[in-house]
Length: 191
Image (cartoon, rainbow, N blue to C red; front, side, top):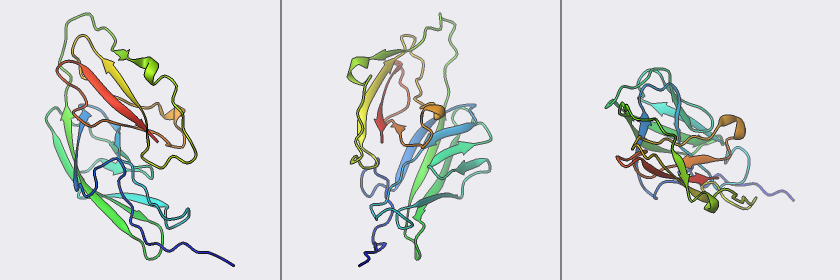
């Protein structure tokens, strides 16, 4: 006997509210390379029905997306620049199913400071210094909430070192502006 999975589910974006069609993200000014990551998943069984492919539609020159949903650029954005485009994710089955979302990127600058340039500090680190992951955790599971503060009020940006995340199993998700005028920021570590 052989059981086959029917491709009856479209990919979805587990970190976004259901039926949300637009996602606004702040990105740092004057940065090239990886800007952010958008995670998609498909609940069909492993194989072509759940293997995903990302593409950008109507993106300005220089923007790209890789197979993990990492949005990159080759041209730095200036403070106040906005870029809007469609991110399409489809499964690799035949016929395939797809979903999409409009991404709006806004370049946020860091104010020039003449103060001491103190490093940001991690807040309540004991709550998230050791996190546990289970094989049964689905894509988009929140593993922990991280917090940091910059006493000088600088914007804070979260990033996972790529060498520590070779399979792109984890991402950092923020829900509000990546920084605030108080220099406080929190983010969720997500599987």
